[in-house]
Each structure stands twice: as structure tokens, then as C-alpha cells.
Image (cartoon, rainbow, N blue to C red; front, side, top):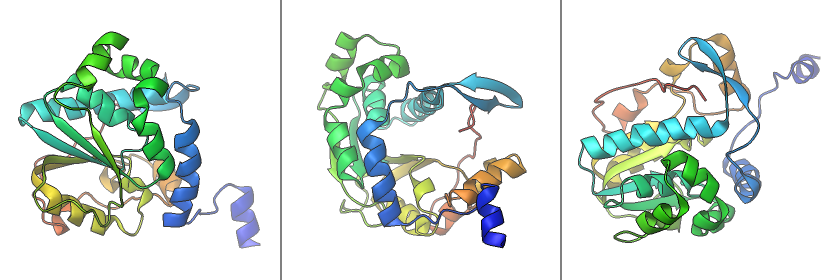
Amino acid sequence: LRKSLKKALGLEQRKRDIPKVREQYGAHWAKRRLLEKPRLALRGRTPILQMHIDFSKSSVEYLTHIIRGLDIKTALEIGSGDGVITAALKVLNPSVAFHGIELTDEGMGASRVVLDRAMDVLMYLTEKNADEIKALYHTAGAPQFEKGDAAGMHFPDHSFDLVFSHTAIEQMPTAYGLAFSEAYRVSRKYACFIEEFREAQKGFFQRLALWKNDYFRASWREVEKAGFSVMCFDVNVIDK
């Protein structure tokens, strides 16, 4: 009865593991379009109507601010998906050598043709035209995308100035400690994790959504256990 009631109310938890992530995101990266239907969100305490792409754009702007402020030369995205975030960052920071590591074959396939399948998205994210994007994307070498698992990366120690994730560790409700430790190992200087840390959740329904989908929802202090010293903790201007 309890299980049926939870299911009827939409409160039944979906357990998330590697096979589930592969299945769900294999289909996701094959068809994903960021310019999809609008949804309700919050800007601070103000309800707004936004496209999903607006959350991605705010993240790209935040990461660009970090890259420029810390004089980053090499960067790795953990869970690069279809390559859109890394591609946009490359266009905005052409002198930086970008790498991406992705779990799914479908994400890898999408990232290799990101300019062909997502040019309109990149134009929105970067506010540049198609010719500018193509030129800047290949400046000093296009981003390199490789298949791999964030919990056990093949890169040598201290390989990148910056290691970052964008709602990728959310897919690791139990193995996130390994991902943070690996990020610490391959980072030479800095890391930035745009994830649903517990302290960023402003209400019951946000916490319930994370629990229901079995997303990562631990404290930002978990990164300290991996060895990091925390420089700052911010809440994104636009909530996911």
C-alpha cells in the first residue's frame, strides 16, 4: 500500500546506478536540444519562465569568469555529454586547451559533430555568429573528447589547470567521492563543480526532487574530503 501510494503521488524513488545512467543518457544525448519548451524556475526569489539553455548559458558565463580570472591554460570537463558546454567555453576562451571525458558512446558521437548539430545553441550561448564560432573553436586546437568514467580517469596526476563539472556528478549519488578524488588527482591547480549541493537547495520541493530522482545531494564539504581547499561556494543566478 505504501509503495502504491508513493507511486500514485509521484514520490517513488528512482534508484540511479551506472547501467541506468548509460541507458537514460544514451538516449538523451542522441536527441537532446537545449532550445526546448520553457519551464518555471527561480531567479533568486523571483519566479521566471526560462528555457533550459538559459541555465547552461549562466554556467558558461560563470566558468568563463573563473577561467579568465585564474589564467587557466588547460581544462577538463567531467561528464562532457554532447560537448556543448566545452565547445562554448572553447569559443569564448580560444587560447585554452579543453578536454572532455564522457561515459556514453552517444555523448561521444554527439560531441564529435557538435558544430554541425548544435550551431544554433552555440550561437545563443556565446553570442557569436557561425563563422566566428568555427574559427575560434579550432584556434590552437579543437577540444579533445575521450570516453571514460569520472570515478576512474586515465589521465596522469596534475594534468589540468582546471577540472570542472556541469550537473554530471548529479548522476553519482553514491560514487561522487571517487569523482571528487579523481578530480583532485588530475587537477594541477583548481576545480569548479556546478552541482546540486545540499546547501544550495532552498526548499522542501527542491530537496524532494533530488531525492525522487536519486541525484547527488550531499554537502559541498565532500570536496574537502577529496583534498580540496574551498575558495568559494556560490548559488547559481538561475536555479536548475
